[in-house]
Image (cartoon, rainbow, N blue to C red; front, top):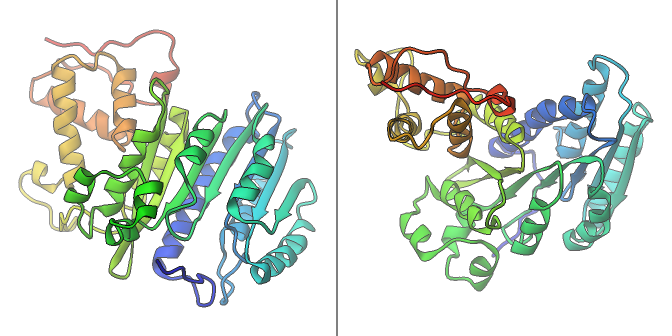
Length: 360
């Protein structure tokens, strides 16, 4: 399987979309822990950092990390007492040298941010930095691998067990489908023959990302999200993970600003929002319509009994709390549920008192 040098030419549109999601999630994530009383240190780990910028000066993940840290500190309500550390690894020697120079220059304006750089392969860097990831810390791990093989089951399960840790990793999903008979695909990605039978050029990343749920240990409450990215004729994408509802909530809010779970019309809805239909139900994207049907069934069968249940159900299905609220409002309008006040939000998860959804 070919490995391409991603920095010999300017970032393409798909790469820019990937980096924009990383940027926006950082923007959501940093203030949460800057103002948290539960952590002493905020840490960002970029294991496939690249040189920092592309050949046209467009910002790569290291530049984005520094800018978002700077802005979070600048616009914070008060001077943070937290230590902030950034870790950058780049295996390629020439890229590492450019990265190192860029980081040294960027640190001049952020002397309060600790930084560590490595010129290692991924496994060596992960082993070296893993001891820093425990304790009263918050971690964001960015794995922008080129291919599929670096995020093994062992790495995945290790990350899931880390406290207060969110991750984003890129995977070449089109490569999974194209080389499905190759041993490295079967060994490194948890897809099954049934998964392959359902794949097409459009849904491949959605299926690949969902397959990682098989690697979540039984009994562990964990949330996964995904975002498919079309690059030319191929579809790749991001997989996001968090052990906390607030993490996946914030990722989904970012993702839905960019189409939900893809940067293209993944379900071939072909909707034109300037020309809406006479019947609103036909104007809903397929993903929202299917979710509302599943939500209706789960609520009316009383599998979901509380606002908190509905909120978590929406997150597990890659949907926003507002989608769930709209679905329940539709049930009220159709007289399937009595009129009632809904609190479908992160606040519902935090509440100690249980808010029951009333039925007729």
